[in-house]
Amino acid sequence: MDLNPPAGENYAHPNICFFHVLFKAAALAFYILSALFFDSFVIIFVVTVLLAALDFWLVKNVSGRILVGLRWWNEINEEGESVWKFECLDQESLARINKKDSWLFWWTLYLTAVLWLFLGIFSLIRFQADYLLVVGVCLTLSIANIVGFTKCRKGM
Image (cartoon, rainbow, N blue to C red):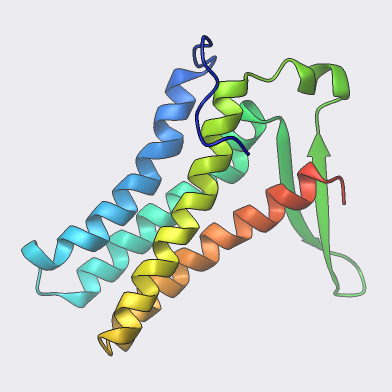
């Protein structure tokens, strides 16, 4: 993966890109800054997890499909086993995916998980088990999207 976005190309879906980044940034910013404004762990937990859940849903159902042409979901079959399902655009359509949109999608997907991991380590060092729970939920949602889209991209 290239560290810099492709030059000379505009975002094909700027609104989707905006919201793709917005909920990730909002969840992280609220979690980090909330201690300055709220004494209630419940408010911090609920709002942060709600923002992370909105991000999870948006990435899984909207921005993944539009920005990179991938979609995944999980079903339970008749035997009670978990089955991953993947959808991918055909090769011709994938070749037309905007490089800048794709770059933004993948980098923010991975960067968000790294930031949640860093915040989790920070909570662990400070012996804040309750805040570690918030980070754990958010990190789990981020990793679920990473695993789903990575498997989908590799055609598993």
